[in-house]
Image (cartoon, rainbow, N blue to C red):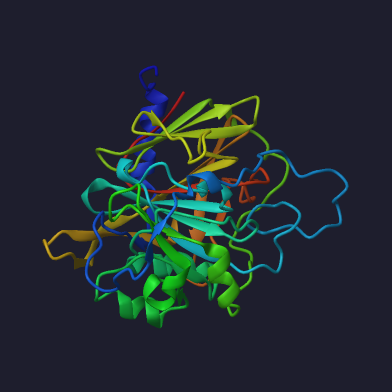
Length: 355
């Protein structure tokens, strides 16, 4: 990849100066609190991968209700399930991340990252590996309403915050029969979820609603960009390369392409780099490592990548229960391509480079 230009360096500095917001993240290890009670001995879920397409909505559906999470027909009136997913080499290949409507990447202890995958339009048979929750997940998910959160544990001081928030605790302690251990993987990277079983027993979850995304024809302007790399820490970067033939972005982590279980890349139709204030939270693990807190209520800079082009502007979310809006300098909402969106919740002072 060519050396960043002066313009790219300037944009990286801009991202360092433009954030004001919140969300706390999870550690690579899972503190005290919930322990998994999932069964063991179930075959590997790699063969159950769901395949989806990044094509634009089919014609003939002009009057059909469209999901506020994907901009595509269908999905309206369906419940929302959020799942915390491991995002290190030990947890790969991940299973059915490509079935999620929205995927958030979050910074956690040690400079590592976790994923928060939002499922509604498509519910796959298996998802994982499932990992632990943190305080910041409560704030991030409040914009979705009273939704289910599937996770594998949390620090004991965080559990009352999860239970007292707007979320429905769907951890193995509350419904262990929906989880299983994959014997071909080492613990704790071997816990998987059968989301259809979970949703069949929990019918009180909030239905999908507007969280601020606006879909449609590409906004005016934009700059040609084939690759974007965002540093989540000094040791972890996300890179998305635009596949012009498929109109999508294929993911790599710290220079390594990410392959989904069952084959093929993990990908997105839209990539949003949302610059947030990330600072030390009040919680730490038994080793004394403090959890990062990423603020997602407030405002800051964002960069949108779709159709091989880039737009930038300001995101805002005045209240935790309200949607996150992404607006251009003109004040107009930026338009996403109908489909799956990845949102990188990146701290200030870390570079975003393009080529």
